[in-house]
Each structure stands twice: as C-alpha cells, then as structure tokens.
Image (cartoon, rainbow, N blue to C red):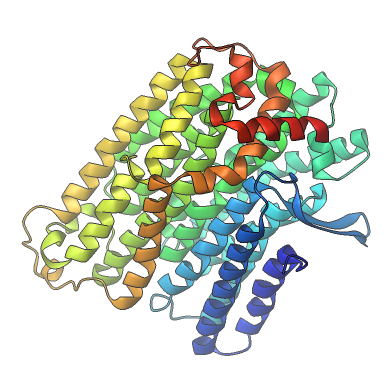
Length: 522
C-alpha cells in the first residue's frame, strides 16, 4: 500500500471524473462526481494513516523531471499539506450532496467544475516545484469563476469578474518574484528554496510580491472586498468550498513560502501584517454586526477569522503557528457548515434576509440544534474546534505583542456578538409568518451533510492532538528557520528563556526531536 503514488491518484481520480461528467448526462454526472469525491476522501484517509508522524519531513514524494520543458512533476507533502488535503477531500463530497437538488441547469458542467476545483486544491498543497505550484494556484480561479458566473445569484457576473481580477492582479507580481527566485537560487525545488538564504535586500522585494498575491487570497483588509460579493452570489456549495479551502491557500502560502524563504524580510515587515490583521479583526466584525444578509454576515466573519490566522503565523512561535493552522482547519469545517445552514433555509424560502425568519426552533428543531453547534464553534466555545485554534493563536500572539493580542481578543468578543445576534433572530422569537411555519425540518440528505461536519467540529475541539501531531515537526522547522531574525516580543509567557521555548520544549519530547531532525535537513 505504501508504494502507491497517492498524490498522483488524488489528482487523477477527480480529473478523469470531471471529463466523464461532461458526457454521461445530468443525472449520471451527480453519481459520478459523488463517487469520485468519496473515493478520493477514502484515499486521503489511507494516506493519513500511512503518514509517519515524527519521520521524514517530506513524505509520499514523486518526481518526474523535465515532464513539460522546465516543469518538473514534483509532488510531496509534509504534515501541514496533509491536513489541508484531507480537509479538501472531506468537504468535496459534502459540496456535491449540497448541490444535489439545488442545481438543475447544466449539471454535468457544474459537477465537472467542482471536480476540477478538487484537482487544483490538492495540487496546490502537494506541489513541490515552484512553477507547478503556480499553475495549480492560478488554475483555481477558472472553475470558481464559472461556478459563480453561471450558477450564481442575480448579480453573479459582477461578483465573478471582481473575484477574478482581484486575485489575478496580485498573482502577476508573485510570478515575477518566482522567476527572480529561480534565477537567484538556480532551482525550482520548493524544499531546497525553503532553506536557501536569499540576499536580505532581495528578500524584501520578494516578500512584498508574494504578499500582494497571498493577502488577496486570504483575504486581508483592505483587499477583502471581493469576498462578500463572491459569497453572496455563489451557489451554496460554491460558498462552502470558497470559505472552506480556497481562502486557506493564502495561509498555506505564508507558511510555505514567505516565512521560511524570506525570514529576515518577514521579521522586518511583520508590523504590516499585525497592523492589517488588527484593523481587519475589529472593522470586519463591526461590519458583520449590521448586515441584513446572512451570507454577507458569515463572509465578513471569515475575514475576521483569517486575520487571527495571519497574526498567529507572524507571531513566529510554536503556539502561534500551530494555532493559526488549527484556526484554518476549524474555519474550513465550520464556515462551510454555516454556509450550508444558510443554504438549507434559502432552499425553502428563497431569501437570505435575516428579518424574514424567526422562531425556527419550533418547526425545525434539528436544524436549530446543528446551527447552534456551528455558531458556538465559530465563536470559539470550549469543546469545539474554534476554541483550540483561537486559544493557541492568541497565546502565541501575546508572546510576540500584548497589544496585538488585546485587539485580536476584542475581535473574538465581537464575533460572539454578531453570531449570537444572528442566531437569536433566525431561530428564536415568535413564529408568526405562515411561509416560515410551513418550512419542514432537515431531510435525510441534509442530515448526511450536517452530521459529519458536526462530528469533525467536536472531534477537533475534544481531541486536537490528532491534528496537531502531524504538523508539529514542520512548525518547529519553520520556527527554527525564523529564530535568528525574530524580534524580541514585549511579553514572555514562559518562565525560561524564550528561545528555548521556541524549539518545542513546551510540547513534550517529540518536537525537540523534530527540531534536531529539521536542523540536520538544512
């Protein structure tokens, strides 16, 4: 089993199924897409079970040199990429199920677009060649553009163009930076580039070019304005995958490229990330409070959550980076679930206006229960996935800067305000409107989507170690790479020397061993 080319299979199965969906007719396309995504999810779970925690940093590597001229077919994953691939394959069959009855026109093309989306998402996280990564990273624009532009809401063309242009403009700068890096280092191999020491003045320009692209993808304030428009116009499954995985490509780019490849520039310019993150947490939370459209409210909450991710990553310590990764995974599950919750009642009443609802706890108790769980996970209730990530992130941010931690914590309080306000207006109150009274509770298909999302949100909250263990060594490697450039923080949460804490002494014996291994590999 260990000899299987897992990553190539994960890319080939949805790619073949996507082509098949175009030719088998609308009804069969649904079953082809569901079957392919379930097989991929099962395959990713087998890969997770085979992953050697504490072993070599890069596993499941595949290399075919000079496959298309300068492009090498170089695939391989570490613990960070593993978890994001499993998140992608987990959400995909749920997105297909969410579209089962909602999509009635050009179903074959729709399913093909989602399967193409899965190919590029897995490709982004598995690529070990810089140019191959860029192709996958940019290719993700195309299926999402069509998903919003063909099957979206009334203003879909505007939203699709805005999404496309915002994300494309930043990426041109990243491509120029990549060409400069290849010219300087003489290689396109990502693991080699992660330990290459670029000249300090060059690092600053490379960092800014990457930041221009990844900040839009995250999205960070003030280049976040495409996200609410895209979410409002996208079909339910489009919003699920956009919030669930596509936003995580930005965070993955920070931790894979900007921090290990440009450590000095990251340390010099961390104030930019902290400043934008603080503004985003407070500003977008306040904007979310006054929304009348459910999808817009959840979209603005996504920007606030991603701001905690960027601040956590640039804390440059073990807790901050691990916490940021857990926030990304948690947000991937919980925001997808919240968008599906909106989709469920939108399918019944065909409006997203919050004021049109009220009293759903009476006639939709199962829905109200699931919605409550995901609301609590979103605001970080202990025992849910949101708590673990936010607690670790804020602890890491506090070590770097107590002021940034203070501002980010106010965002969590505001997050509780707008999510509970949303929940109260939809689920509680008098059930007076006749059309709302007539809305039936969850059907078996909706149960089949809600239950796994709820199970994972609770699993991450109750036993986060299963998600922290695969990535711990990789985070230690990044922290060790950043350590020489790291500025002193204004708060020290550990009693000993901060440098010692950074090398994993607060995480038991495993990280220390990993740090030793990481040092050897560089």
